[in-house]
Image (cartoon, rainbow, N blue to C red):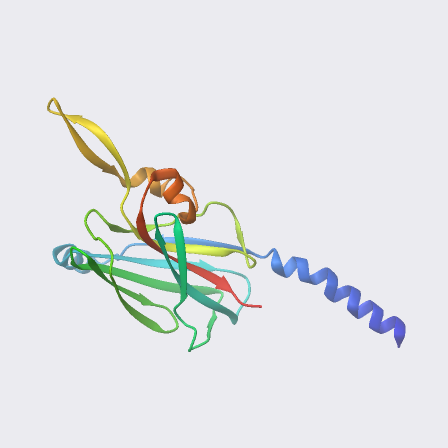
Length: 198
C-alpha cells in the first residue's frame, strides 16, 4: 500500500509541470460581415474577437482590466462575482466607442458581459491587439486587448514639423503592455489580461 501511494504521489508531481507548461494560443479576428464593419466604422466603434485556445476544458479564469497611468498600474477583476470557466476555444469579444474627449465605453463579452465606462482621454486612442510576446502557458497573465494611443513622434509634412502617431510600432513590437510607458512613453492606457486560476 505504501509503495502504491508513493507511486501515485510521484506521478502527480511529474504531471504538475506538464499541466503548467500547456501552451495557450491567442488569435484575433475583426468582424467579417461587411455591413457590420461599415456600421461600426460609421459609428466610430472598434471591435475584435479574441480567440484563446488550450487543450484543457473547464479552466477557471479571471479577466482583469489593467489601467496604466504614468507607469503605475491598477488591476481590477471583471468577473470576481461570477466565476467563469473556459472551453478549449474561448471567444472574448471587445468593442470600444469614445463617449467624449475624456470617456470611453468598452463592452467585453465572454462567459459574462461587462460594460465599462472608463474616464480616459480618448483622442487618438484605438482598440488594439496585444500580439503575443512569447508562447504563453497556464501560469502566465495573458494580455488580450488594449485601448491605447500609439507611439508619438515628429515628422516633416510639407516642410513643417508635425506630431504623428505610429500604432503599428506598438502593435508589432511584441512588447508586453505593462512596458509601453517605458518603451513608448504612452502615459495613460488600458489593457485586459487573462489569468487562469489554480
